[in-house]
Image (cartoon, rainbow, N blue to C red):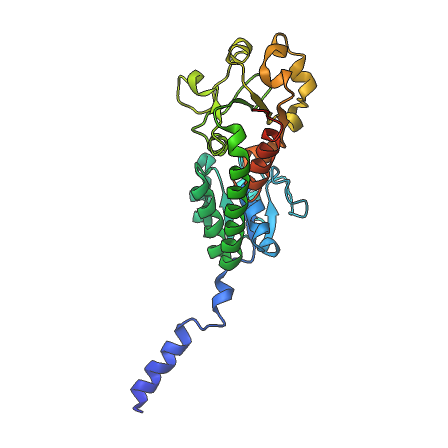
Length: 281
């Protein structure tokens, strides 16, 4: 072979990534400022690559929780961890561009609006971290389980009305939100839809409105933050007349499960199905 050809071949072999070099391209020092992404990363087997998570990432317990904030981020504090990937759900103050100016790779995953969107984010994390097979398997399990739970509970839920409580001052979530779409799988009708005059998806209702709407099911997504229970709800003036209160159809669910769109979506669906199992048609 001519010397020139040998030199060209040598240069190609030096510059081209080898099969062994492939995995080295995957991030080894991940900082997650998204509680949902944190759950997904650990669920797909990428937990060992995560070196720090934000102050809201409380699941799983073994996640390396820090004082970092995804809402009021400190770019220098994040950079001090020397991450090769930062995952964010929000971009306050141009966080993404600030980190990229420091040559830190950023993956932005906004709040998913649909189940397919949530599945897509899990797969994206799998691809970028080298755990695509595990991510695909997780999504497949989630789909199978959710399909089974919905098939079981939809007959009882179809046509019933519900009220999803985010805070004791009666902020709610409409059927246009991610959590609202989960309820829609069961054929449930959201009382907050008609009250969302601004289209925000998160209207504040009045006590009179909730009582007059007479929901068949009440879901408390403020049980951890604000200690709301079936007893506190029943003690609210006039709420004893609500069918959900009279029939004991008040579901308490962990605030974080109700506000995230990762692997524990299945837990939310399971909880709704369990609550509907008490409905008598």
